[in-house]
Image 1 (cartoon, helix red, strand yellow):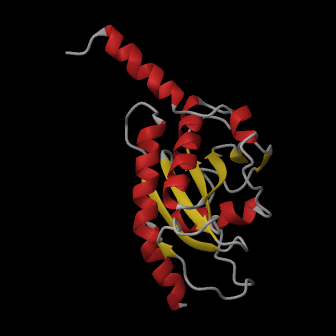
Image 2: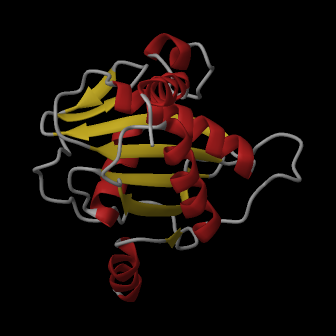
Length: 199
């Protein structure tokens, strides 16, 4: 039977597994050269609704190599649980880079949620989870991006835009880019990518 002391300890541990915006900004997270292109591409591929997370792996040229989307479980925000969920998705869609001395690929996280673009404790837990999952999979920790009804926002950078947003229609896949190998994708995007590849 849980006691108030147990609940207090669990709450304290949960709070320890989150990053404040200042901590995130000081962590040296690499800036995306074209965040809107990344956000629009992931939005088109996965068509997320609220409480959907999309983890994507980019190469050194910021080309998408793999991505997966999944629904956030209805439970209190906890960085450890988010870390495990992200790590499970990364293991499904791309091999780890743990044998490399320095990471060559970067993982970014796009989280679609209700509310406005201001930082929340849930965002802090996702940031902690992303950083830890990247360490355990041999990846560089990249941007954390929220997608709300107001638009998208790269937290810790102050960059954002009104489209895409939670309510907007997905934009067509870009065709002007040089061809790259089709990224491995999990979640709802598999069928979308198969149709795009057949065009």
